[in-house]
Image 1 (cartoon, rainbow, N blue to C red):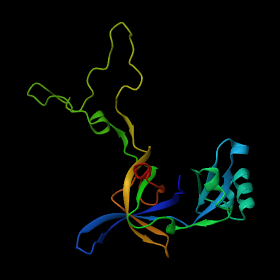
Image 2 (cartoon, helix red, strand yellow):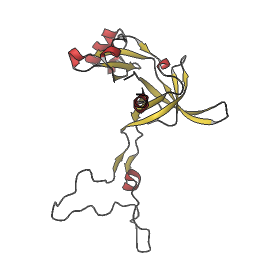
Image 3 (tube, rainbow, N blue to C red):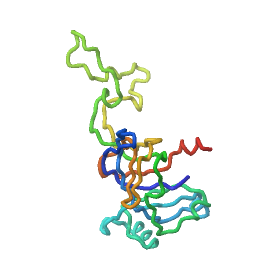
Length: 217
């Protein structure tokens, strides 16, 4: 699996093609990211690259994170993510190496992983897309309710995972097969066509698309 980058969602803007088409894009500041460690088959039973992004204040850094940063010769990163690689691919990287936006190119398909926006406590209509109750002349104050959830004597309880009102959002979300509309190598910016998960300033991970790689094979 090719290496991805950790970045920060900066917001949305638009770009224009040579034909005058307007394309909405999300701007992602992707680094520079730093290789802070490796996972090997001999020691960890799998191979992966540990990539760090940003800087964490010393008072917010625990001892394991500080020790790992000391080995890499870098400051403790704000976020660390592991990128699964084969042993041959892992050998191409060195601890302390910087990874920048030039890992991607315009037109490339990517998958973006992030945490969705929080919506607070929501009902079944918004949270689960239920139709709601009949808005007839005999219905009063019961338009967006979930309806009956009870059981008979057997089993005499509500089943787990029943679709009910509750907290919505703040979930790990992946949007697949998005297109890179532009790469600003100098400022380490990626322009991703369309919307991606999370609020402004949210941390996201941009990976080469899984389905696009599978299609090439």
